[in-house]
Length: 166
Image 1: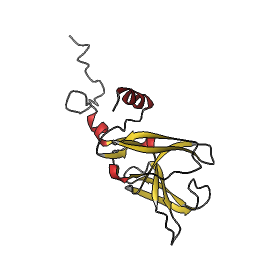
Image 2 (image 1 turned 135 degrees about the horizontal axis):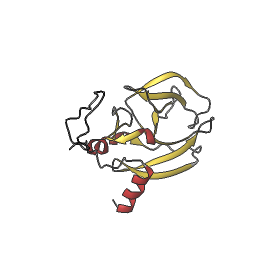
Image 3 (image 1 turned 60 degrees about the vertical axis):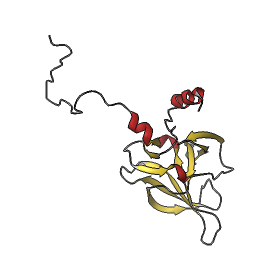
Image 4 (image 1 turned 180 degrees about the horizontal axis):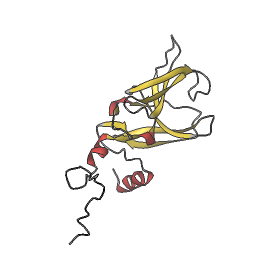
């Protein structure tokens, strides 16, 4: 990988570069997908498409806009460890002929994307559209350095600040 690629991705806040591993929920760390789950399902409804290194794989990222004018950069996956919330809808789908259901994190219920379901008897495969900014690589999350100390926070009313005491 080239350094300019790393710098661009760091500036974009993606932090999903890794050559192996998993993508986890950015909020709680729940495992969502493995590298081998990433697949391509292009749509003509994409406002913009590009390829980005996700877990060492060039993944198709598509910018999509919902009826409320909210834009999402998504990747598509063949499976995801999520909860499906509510009923499925055929209206306002980004993938013609597919029904969609909201997909949330099993642990913290953060909205992570959508499950797209093909009609019964169709040759199309079901898949997920996951919001890229709501995911982070487990390798990256594991590399974050913890501050020195035992990890316990002083919650006393007047914590002593050793930095300022003689």
